[in-house]
Length: 312
Image (cartoon, rainbow, N blue to C red):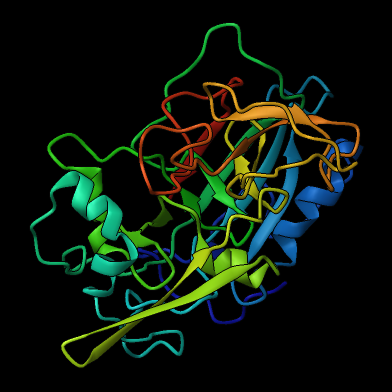
């Protein structure tokens, strides 16, 4: 999974030129056996940009205490937020989001004009996510932040469904690109909502939608509600994130899954964790979430104890 075309990050430093925990290599030696299959997907999903997995013995006591994922945080899919010289650049009419998020537009009373997220562009980042090697429910819960709370399998940051103070997250929907993501001021590209292009690229089911208004046709893709068993990534507490839950969500054995809890997750067997594991789901409006038509990544708090994330 070597990347021979890494460009400079927003800090002016290429990830390939700095010393990292994984040292630009994969080492699964100390990854718990239950996690090996799932974490291996980080090294195979994005064939263009480097993602590495390893572990860390942070205090030098001989016991590895963190599972580590390192990413340059660049998607392999197309986006209007790439520089126009990038082969992955694709023009996009932001007005499409008026129709993709029509129900939310109506409910929120949005009257703005869809447009880009300012001059922001996708920039290389050097992100290191450290997750507890033995994830467990936290007795005291931690709030998620206004930044990277996890990484999707293609190495892109998950953000929660909150905007920084002074902004309205609903308004941000109308700055999203064709893959439902956008970059913030430092060029950190991220998903607040279900990453539809990643779902598609992982073999999940999406629907093609279009509408024609005043002679202009707007087209987009959406999750079709059948991807609740599709692994999308992990949050900082070490628990996996799966796709949006549909009306007939089942566990790995085909049995009806338990209800979603207030952290937008539950415990049952999955394809990657057949013995069962607590996991999150991308939030739907009627199952595990608030009264919203949008599939947000997560809610206000982590179920487990979060590790750490650094961005260089």
